[in-house]
Each structure stands twice: as C-alpha cells, then as structure tokens.
Amino acid sequence: MNRIERHGRGGEARLRYLDGDFQVMTPGTFVCCAVTGLDIPLDELKYWDVARQEAYVDAPSSLARFLEARDGVLE
Image (cartoon, rainbow, N blue to C red; front, side, top):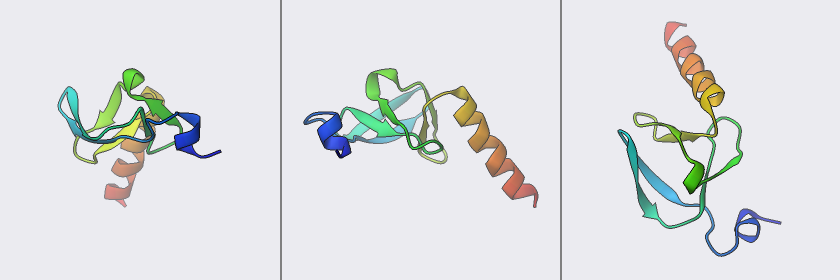
C-alpha cells in the first residue's frame, strides 16, 4: 500500500515552511518527517525548520536534527 492509498486522494503535500506558519504549494493531507520518515497529517503538524525546509513529527525529532546539524558543523 502506498502513501496515496493510505491517505485517500489527498496524498503528500508540498509545503513552504515559514516562521510560525506554512504555505501549501501542492495540496495533500500529510507531509513526511525528515528524521523518522513517518507521515504527519497537516492538521497535526507543529514542528518544522524554516532554514532547512523540513518537517518533524515531534519535538525529540526536531532536537535530533538540530543536534545532528550542529555536530556536523563542529567536525
């Protein structure tokens, strides 16, 4: 079963992440977490990074990406 079948006709949205908001570029019902790969319904999307243009399923995933990027810069 692919994502479109799991989420009906909505499919994966393409968003532009802004400070405190996001703009829907391609309509859909969910986005994919950049860290876990889990689907995030748009009505549950709370965590993203404007500079990286990435969505995260929860705060720990967001922190993990932040620490990963920080460690990469320091090496």
